[in-house]
Image (cartoon, rainbow, N blue to C red; front, side, top):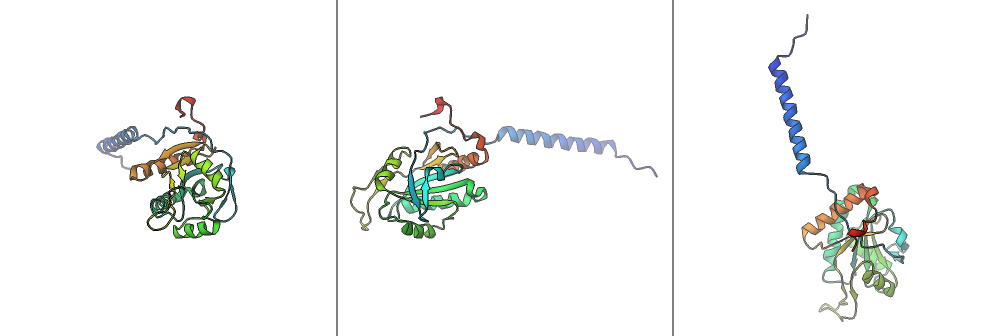
Length: 222
């Protein structure tokens, strides 16, 4: 028995569906091109040698090969630091699929008090993944030089105490993005959702496009 032929109208209908689907896909692609950020090069992270909350050495090379999201906090802070650490926790959760390709690094601006033991408790309070989120302490003078130098973040501990009796240490609240080659590629205000969203997108882009983690052209540098 000869197989039945498909009526011409159904062939035409099927072809029409394919054409419409192709048009929709192409139209969507033009309206939503792949995300490709314009990242500035703010310079390279200089050599430093501190310790992490585990007590192990944490040096500049500890950041190499990772995309790093950086902030500055201290454990006795009763103002902005808990909010900053909550933002870091959110970023930890958002980038969980990237595993250790993206790491989070919180430098203490009160390193004399924030020993590895103190930072370990703070990390536990914020549910930090020890593989991905590191809390850094060390010599105060060197920490201040790093904060105020390459990371463009103030650090002033000569302001007395807060009403709660905690040290009133002023420091920058912005987050920074460092690429796999240790170049600082972005500075972000994460107080509002758009800033946090952009930081995540840029970090995700660098993590998934390692060949693009190169120094920006000279015209794009600060």
